[in-house]
Image (cartoon, rainbow, N blue to C red; front, top):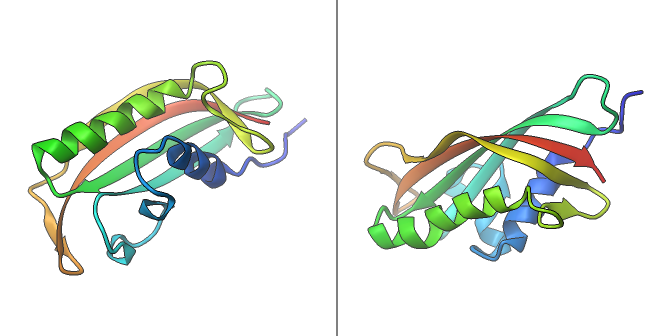
Length: 140
């Protein structure tokens, strides 16, 4: 039997905000980067598919883009902690959003890598770091 469709955007939005690295208004699912007034900020998107006949188990591809000012401090204080945060979700109780879902497994597809030299967006200079992950998530 096919499980109810999981709200993967809500799952990851909640988990990123709960990590406390950025404020809730600095984290969003699939928005135009020009919409952010401040940096750093994070945009996430995910693709899911029901995993064979496993009721409530989903394969998930998560892409995360962290926009910073490109400084070493931003990499150390923002990008690295997000990498650690994503990998912390597969430990018991860390990746659970009650009533939404939970993370059971996390693997790197691409660790965070700087993409280019940066660009100007809405009167601010930003450097994107992109990471992607393969996860197993479950309805909760």
